[in-house]
Structures are given as C-alpha cells and as structure tokens.
Length: 194
Ligand SMILES: N[C@@H](CCC(=O)N[C@@H](CS)C(=O)NCC(=O)O)C(=O)O
Image 1 (cartoon, rainbow, N blue to C red):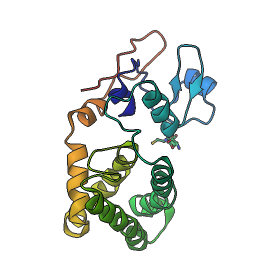
Image 2: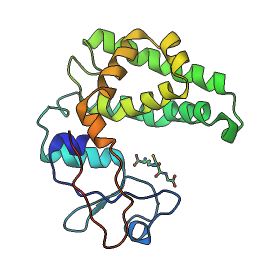
Image 3: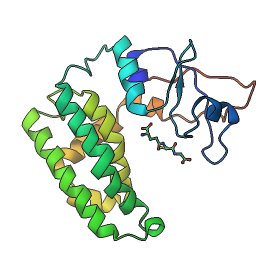
Image 4: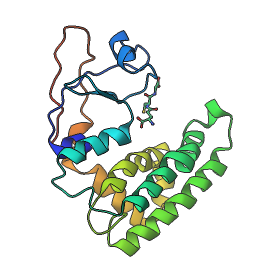
C-alpha cells in the first residue's frame, strides 16, 4: 500500500512461500515476504521498513504526518499482542489453542482502536489515514475474515466502518492483484497501484 501510494516504481516477482526461489533466499535468508531490492542492490525485508522507505521518498497523502511515537506504539501493539492472538484464533487447530480466549484478547485490543477512531474523527491518528491505519488494517481484515458473522455481530461499529472503508479502496484492490509466479527470465510486472 505504501509503495503504491508513494508512486515509487516497483517491479514485482511473485513467489510461492512453499517453493521460495533461491534468488530470494540469496538476498534475504530469513525467507519471509515482502523483500524489496533497491536498484543499488540494498535489501529491505521487513514490511514496516519498506513502508518507511517508500514514504520517505514520496508521501503525497501525508501518511507520515502523525505523531511518530504513538504510531510506533500502535504498530507494535498490532505486531506483538494482536498478531499473537490473531494467529492463535485463526490457526487454533495448528496451535492447539483456545480460539475463543484469543479472540477475546484480540477484541480487547480492537475496542481500544475503535475508541481511538471515534475520538480522532474516523482514523487512528485523526480524520485522515496515516501509516498506523495502513499498517494495521490488513491484520484487522484477517481477524474479521476468520468469522465474518462474528465480526458483524461483535466488532465495534466504528471499527467495522473503518475496515470497510480501507478494504473498499481502489488501491487496496489493486495491490491485492495476483501476479504470475516469477521464474528466472520471466516478466517482472509493474506493481499495480490503482
Ligand atoms: N515482520 C515481517 C513478517 C513477514 C512474514 O512473516 N511474512 C509471512 C507471510 S505474511 C512469510 O513470509 N512467511 C514465510 C513462510 O510462510 O514461509 C514483515 O512484516 O515483513
């Protein structure tokens, strides 16, 4: 999303996580996506770092115009306790965990986000989206998608509206496009940006 918003030109190599190409592991041995390789060969392989990198170059919608410490705190809460609960709710079979307990822990965090959205006028840091919203909504979407009926019945309405707005954005649709899996020598399409 940040790459798309920044307009920084990016070519995409789609990979299968179950069949990671050696070319990817050679530049980023930890084997997670996304991996960004700059034209000078420098590698960034954490999504938040990629967001910062893109928006430092061009931030036409002012996604960095928010309190940095508060933004970092919200993202750390998301990447730490929220993701912990989400994974154990979503993959309760794999983790042999109590799905409902983890769902409740996640909902506690989501209630806090909803209170912020109400207080701030629509988004996490103010009336307009900033980095925190863009970094966090895909995880809230994953939570909602585990059980949409539960989400609609129990998630705070401010958060339902916030998520619906982000999911409906043309940019989100564009960046969710599927690309043919890359193989050496195959095309590297431009990132679709909406
Ligand atoms: N903190 C990392 C997490 C990246 C991550 O875990 N990505 C998952 C996919 S969403 C992955 O690549 N998993 C490796 C695998 O499933 O083999 C980031 O945000 O870049």
